[in-house]
Length: 453
Image 1: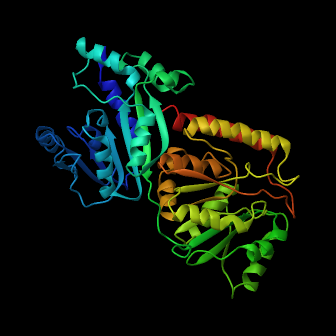
Image 2: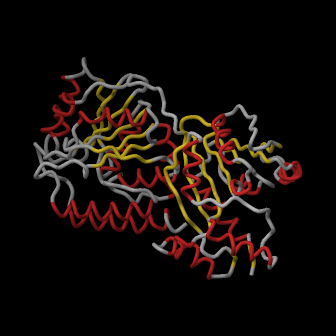
Image 3: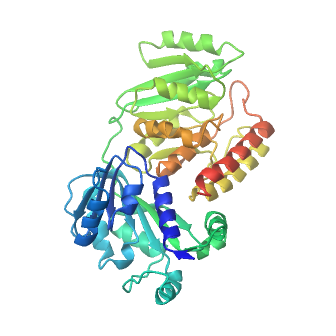
């Protein structure tokens, strides 16, 4: 049996899952640099108070473009702002955890993500036994904190926690058993309570001072057989943002939707910035991607042309994003009472089922995964699109593609409730049973890519 290596490999693999090649990364307490050197990032810095460790890291990873500096976590003297900050197996040995958390703020911008890896106190006696048996390296007496202790310390230091994850049931490497216990059994209800590793994901608590005119906005409006809704969409959209463009993407309609879109672009050319296009592929996902490629705004929005989500609600999404409440804003139709014919009963049951599945898959509460209105910064979408090959072209609708992509980018996903209205024109393009089976297959596929990693 081996100890330590299997757990270290899991730590590296899991943190790297949320690391992006375009991100700047700082590791506090980097030790010999193995973790930092093994994860993605374009600008990486590691600090540690051990001169011996930093010398070893500089020697081992010379020429890799990583900066390793001797520096105490309690007195960080860095001027750069980082996209991602990592503290792995560190807070248990810190003299003043709150002081270190407060120090992190000098290295954070509004969207910085912090990943803290620690060991659950439940395992402390067994780890001490492993040290006594000499199958684990001996460590000093350590702080004992559960997830709520970490959350509270982050909160009083100016950060909010948006996700907690538990991993590793078997911390020693045993062929086959380690795979079964750590990759599969550790993710199941009840058993996850006995895992060793705990990960806390946090971001700065301070909200942006941006106002309603700071960002340009592109609203992509997929439209298939929606000719009777096009003009209403234009007339009902409120003005917000520095400048706003509407992008209508027509998708293989059997009515005169494309003709009406062209007419409305000409009719409202003097009052609105309207772009139009036709998708060459099939499905809403293709329409949304086509629209996003045409978009020039700093913020990207999706609005279904059926107008069951009121266009008047879009400023709520804009405000939640620009003030830092979240990085990916997801609409939810299941808070306010719906109009009578807005959602059929079987559709409602399906939504409730997928809500439970997503809450388990992505380790945060979801209320509605299939609302068509979703909002994010264009810069984040570009990263999401660049990494789409990880999941593949598995989603014809686009909702899950964006949600899973936002999760892997380590974005904070926030729900904004909307009132769901009945259609005033046309019929739904959704088939309850056919599309429900497709969504279920997508969840099973994504479980391998999101949960069992």
